[in-house]
View (cartoon, rainbow, N blue to C red):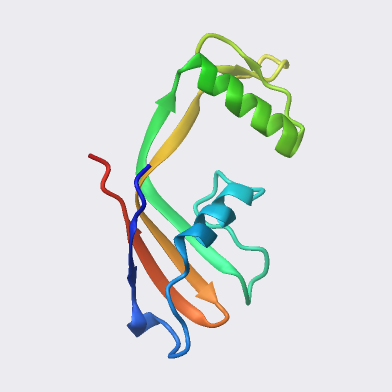
Amino acid sequence: MNEPTPEFHAGFSEPTAGAVPWADVERILGSAEIFWLSTVRGRMADGTDVVVEGRAERITDHARLLELAALWKVRHDWNYRVLDDTFDDGAGHIALVFAVRPAKVLAFGKKPHSQTRYRFNNS
């Protein structure tokens, strides 16, 4: 993934605020407990909301599915068995796996209030 270009929106931000660094946005998304939601933040009045917009693409690559199953085992203690191109939860539930290729990411800071937009060139 290419590094996005930030566009800080001063009109929706406090005078003392600045763009949320992309490294912080990546860290927030990477450590979010509920990462399939479009926004992640711990408390209502502080933190950073992150919204990802993009194209959902099905993951069928067996090696990538094994990697994701291992990640979710460590992070959530979920036990998925990887079949050819799906997950099996062991209780008869088969799951398709999708990823979002980001086109735009919005970061909304809470203290101070700020808004930053990141655009990706996914060519």
